[in-house]
Length: 75
Image (cartoon, rainbow, N blue to C red; front, top):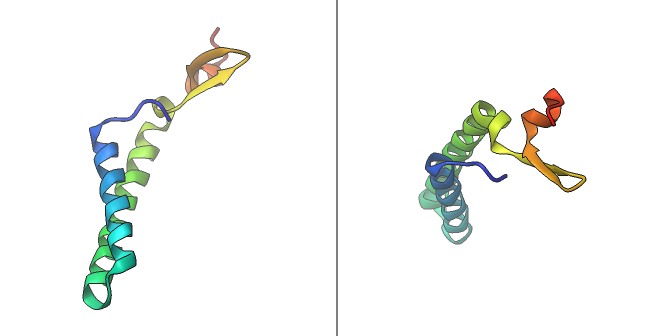
């Protein structure tokens, strides 16, 4: 993935932090971190669904183009 914005990056960083903190927490704190991680994961999934067509570049035979250009057959 090469084309992402601050919204996706922030959700990814927060997701990673929440998962990491949940591994060392217990009780209510663990549940809170896991719930936060789930929310950040939903944010990332939503962003990917909305931006899938422009988020990824594909390299084929040395040519790099956005995924949608390959699918449309653009040279």
